[in-house]
Length: 463
Image (cartoon, rainbow, N blue to C red; front, side, top):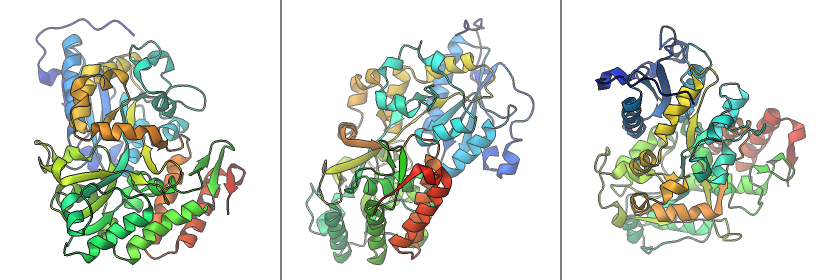
């Protein structure tokens, strides 16, 4: 890294921190590219990140790190670029910013599932030479390192968070339905039976919710469909690593869509309008689940961040009112349970102004102390051994040990450039079932789409 700039005393907060694109990111895509205006300032480090709903946790994390960085580099400015958008729109708008040297950030917050697609599009540059000399690279879990490593063997990001998924359930709703406080299903049928019991009880709660359809973006693919698919007996999931081919025509794929079809046919989930509402997650976290209007929710390890004292809907009694159940495999076979793990990290775009300076700020963002604070605020699972060894992290949430333990039997999405397009095809298949298609018809459409995406030579057909 280059030597730190000469320290200039007396810099105030406005001298090192500013916001540029928070409002501009709400503009149409055609207007977004012009949001920054002017030429790039070599003394400015611009960082882009997603901001959605009332959640400002990332903004607060970056702001605190910028304050620390400024103490050592007072003449530098950290430019926060909050992209106010739902998940799919965030990826699109972030890519649009990265596509131009004039608008590109110097650091971007990347979901591991989109990273290799952005690498393939030429938006990100390798940082292998930078991470190999960084003191905490060895603290990162190997699986997380693999998720940010391209097919060329180069590293394209620094992993920060990971997550796992399970069934969150409202104890009071299940109790009204005659279900135990320590409910743990051992098959899909037991989940459906519990949902039917809630529907038939005196409760007015919606029995079960999983994210589905294109408006929900990657949440639908990962929190919804893949939590089902990877629990089926096929074993290969979306992609067969041994044959290096995408799997089409599997019975497990049809069965996962069939589970969704059952929820719709028996009215065991929310109405279609709410299922396809891109903002439904905020309603779930701030009212439906806390108010006992939802019985079961298949979701991620982080969602209790919505119930802290400073969140939009404080719910201090949630550890007593909410239970957690492992997602079972389809018939209880195999490992018996299933979870999907993912995560986010920081990457350096191709059009960075000064890559070494950007990496210098990145290391401040991901110091042990900073990441402990961020994990607690964001309610996520760390990928770092040094962070996981801190007692403050280990005790920050009643659920952190539970969700960390699930990593032992977790599956990861195929870390391949084609995955984001395949994921979109999954969301379309789910939405087709939501709107009346049979699982067989939705699967046939998915198969045709994936064949077009990856090429016929890169798929394998199963009966």
